[in-house]
Length: 192
Length: 152
Image (cartoon, rainbow over all chains, first blue to last red; front, side, top):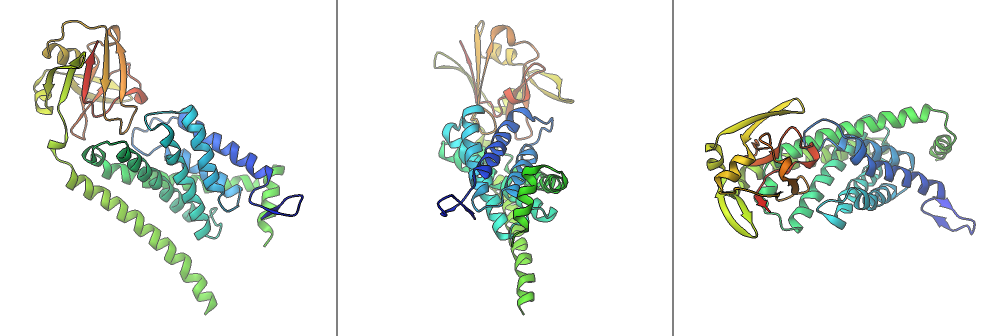
């Protein structure tokens, strides 16, 4: 855990917060900019979960995923909008919190491809569950929500897993690249 | 003993998480089978100034002449929106507002009269509902599970 000038423990350094903010912006903008011609529900999870996993994998601090999800949710409410209004940020918060849980349970081994795939699948599923809950809260009939839910759940798991796996590849690649910021994180990782 | 505990725990966690994921997918398929029936799909209504001009069940829509269109490398088929409006007794309009429950989209699409061409159709989806589609309607603008066509 980082320490401030006063010696008090801080959850995040300024550098952590800057990295998290950048990745949060990437997550939100990926929904707008990185549109893939895959017309299947949950496919956006492929880029979304990859970016989320890379962000959480770089900032290896408790609650980093939740902060990432929270900030990207706020940006998404402002940029993406939609019928959910302010509830939209919940859809972004849930995968972030799930990444934190995955990091905690895997003891920060998000770089492992299998762990990454499972984390991505779980996080993307959390997004779907939150979306369903928000829709229920908005009064949309259960029958409508259940229509196509089987396929939607399956594709969310598959694309989430793919995204998580891609994220682990990017994380591993970034560690090999000679970028000062990343080297700082790499050194921090080596400290027991 | 210590090593053994270290080895078992992550494997157990992964198995539990995978179990949850499989259970969720199975539950989703089960919910779809149990909670949905053709009765869940409300009729499509055509309205003007809050008055319902006509109602069409999915079977009635299937009885109308269909048109096919091609977009994103896929083709779709359904009755032309103009044909549905004519069937509802609409002779003229300036704007068409397409509404849906907004489960998988914004749930609303506003089209000016000149945008409503013969190529704009109510495409029959696999879900048993119709979606508004056409060569000039972007994927993100589509309204799925259309419930209302409002003319102004």
